[in-house]
Image 1: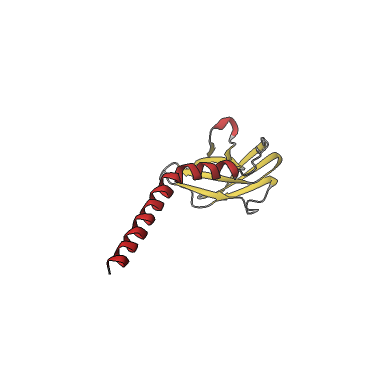
Image 2: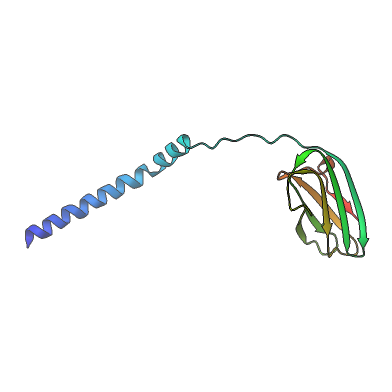
Length: 134
């Protein structure tokens, strides 16, 4: 019986030693994996807005048309002036990469709001400032 107990004690101490070494090596191994596994990244070319038109359709609906120099995916972040609530508005084309995007804002408050144009995930509003939607 003592022999079995001695063997299990050796196994437990060996397991604890292994866990201690593995825990100590984790930061090193993580850094090594990050160095070896690098994903290729390329910077997206800057896309410029050539024209923006804001049209009031009815009391709570606006249409914003955006023309670009080159194709890009786009969406708007609309912030209502009265309620302060922001919402994301997708292009009617479904966010496909193209040179003309049309956005329809439904449920706008009576005071309108501000729209920030996002191209390829980057704020591309003219002058970096939101467009007044009134």
